[in-house]
Length: 306
Image 1 (tube, rainbow, N blue to C red):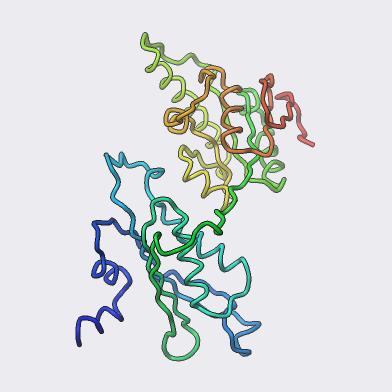
Image 2: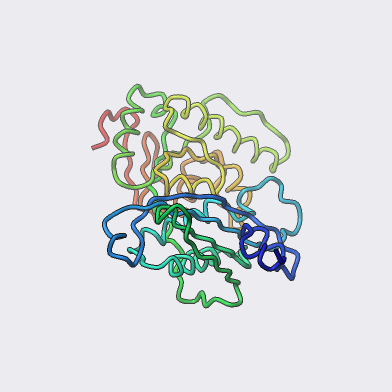
């Protein structure tokens, strides 16, 4: 078998390596199978069939240390999200159409330079039928492509009295049922934080104190996940996961960071709600700051959110 024929049937990762003209890193999604209605033939309408995706994305190597930071890389969930968005947009007849749309959506990510997409139907016989395409950033017109609109969460600040309230779980029940992604925020615990003579060190200490309280709240409701990166927040909002914000990373990494001190937790949360383009900010058990976000303010002993 010649090398060209072997590569024709090789995995997209091997094809990518063989055809690369520049040093690139690669991420891959292998053997991702979904059930979907797809196909141009009449017998394919009204029925689901298994479709397998193999995708390889070439990205330019990062400059500087990665620092084990998920926000610096192209996350794998961006690839599965691209597939999901295109499958949900409309019924598609051709695998070629689906492959091209998935590739173009992946290339919307700023890190992506080239993408290989292989899609196979698994239920059309005792074999697999498929297509494979390759697209590069400089070969695709991305101007008409839209990014997936980020969800607009409901951000809720809970005071320490609210966190300690016996009905906090019932509040979370009601908030989670209101039809928007839920991000819960806390302030520092009542116990005083350690004091440092250096302002930058004190800022970190105060942010970590807030995160300690976030974990205290998470321990009261197992549905809640403490989250500290924008990538994790985006994933959680799209997957109906209730989050509790751990502020250190987002605050310290912000180019135009908050003017509020971590000791003014409510003002810090108002900044965060603006950054997340929240649909509204709820404040339970504290005074409201000045904010451009629509706000609802309630006492910590209020037993019913409605």
